[in-house]
Image 1 (cartoon, chains in turn purple, green):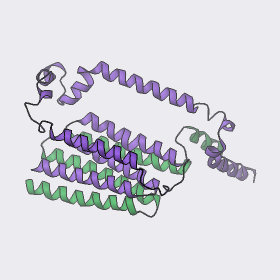
Image 2 (tube, rainbow over the protein chains, first blue to last red):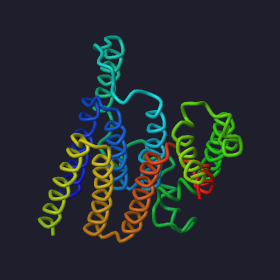
Image 3 (cartoon, rainbow over the protein chains, first blue to last red):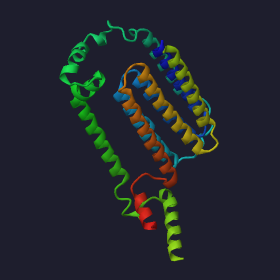
Length: 202
Length: 98
């Protein structure tokens, strides 16, 4: 009963945030709402006992994505342009949603012990987790130890991607070559610097 | 116990809904930032309450980590507002100004 109440309130909150974010035209509000959506979704993952997924969702969804979206917002207008409904994408999205809804009815019930996913290698991991790894949370022990190499590979890929992005954007060269920056991104800082110099001179 | 949990959850749900309404309406950007921060705090409370009623004290650690992420995220957004950038060259600018 309590689990149902928690899930129901979290999912209705998610739906509310999603609908509001779709209806709003002010892009900053949409970014903020998507951050709130990530936090609520992360709470839902915690309730589902997938703590690591929840941490990733909270750190990436609410943290990094919001910052990236804000960085994009500084380059685009603050309001969404009014537009008519794009029928082909709408049809594709609705068709995908319908197919997923049909597929969901065919899934085994949540927590069903006879579901195929619980009868393959999962029993071994669940039995061995406490002795092999010694972490109380099975999801964490699978993620960090049983498939540790996979996680390491993912981390290497993300690290490489971050380095590549920093190199492309030139994040390391900016402080030493302020004149190389594009006029748009430097305007605010340049203004501040000019003010500061003016004060010093005065 | 069940009733206490239900009442707490309903109260938190109402608080979250109000915060989300503020994030939607909020005339200024700072209203929205504060409202999203409040939603994060409510998520922290929700995890703590759920861990308490489910008999899993380890959830408190998760709640604390969430509070930290929430704090850092808010600081990052506000810093972005103030300086228009997040890199360390902001510090260089400050040093030059000083």
